[in-house]
Image 1 (tube, rainbow, N blue to C red):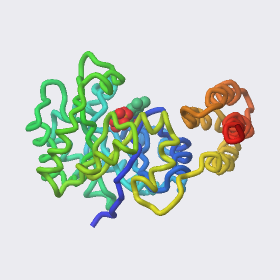
Image 2 (image 1 turned 120 degrees about the vertical axis):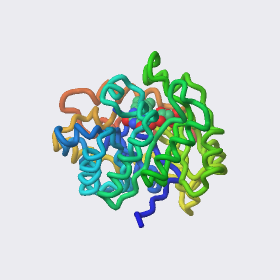
Image 3 (image 1 turned 180 degrees about the horizontal axis):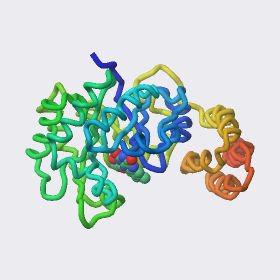
Image 4 (image 1 turned 90 degrees about the vertical axis):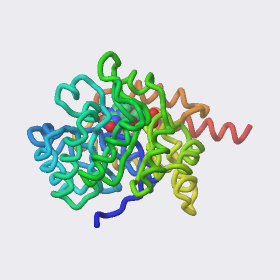
Length: 333
Ligand SMILES: Cc1cc2nc3c(=O)[nH]c(=O)nc-3n(C[C@H](O)[C@H](O)[C@H](O)COP(=O)(O)O)c2cc1C
């Protein structure tokens, strides 16, 4: 039996976004949300700076390592390395449509090669005791009917032993659309994902794509097992503060944002002492206050000051004063 992970709500893997600093801060807002790394290719792990790609803080748990690749042996090696680093899950990226990824023959183009995906999942699962999950699209190019989608899932489930699918509910167009366009232009077809859960109730199915609020998440959770949120969670981080109570049903208060900022500062100081630039930490906080008075000043202060050479953690505290003092002003008036 592989360890069970609660995937009711997760934040999507996002390159240049969900790095370890971002995840550390997200964890201060929600204890229960499952967090994913950015995609790391098997080549980067095997030949690159492993520590840079894989190191994370144990306070980030539960955290899943997302791999990109298509060589079963290399992926199994990486899964083993990921397990040794302490990740809670290994996820295989079958959704990324970028040219770089296609040239490396991985990501979304592998939806055309279900047996190879199954072999990758099997090889990883044989090597480690962690859950192996797949994040895919509902199709690619002309392979976009429901039957083809389900055939892909069936092959990966039955031949590869995959029990959990995270489905970005739009197809990928491999030629002609940029990765960004591929997150916006192909229409969302949530019904494919609902139907998969209906027809394959034994599989764990998480839905992803265009989900922007807790209310929408709760709606989807009436149909599938989990919700994965990407851009909305990153751009409006404070949404995570209510997840434990509203989605997981925990008897707790929503996370207090100023308290989370304060709790982040010792981590910031540690990382600065290790040579990390403040901007690499503070840039993830830009989207913290949406629609709150003082938010623009917060963003501007961070943008202008966190990039300065030698900038210290006090920049974050100073920026926060624009927001917290406006909130006090509002209460008083
Ligand atoms: C900046 C950015 C980087 C992304 N990088 C990855 C990645 O590394 N791996 C992956 O599987 N998906 C990646 N995605 C796709 C997201 O995981 C997600 O599937 C997609 O954004 C749709 O969800 P959303 O509408 O909630 O954002 C990325 C998305 C964005 C916006």
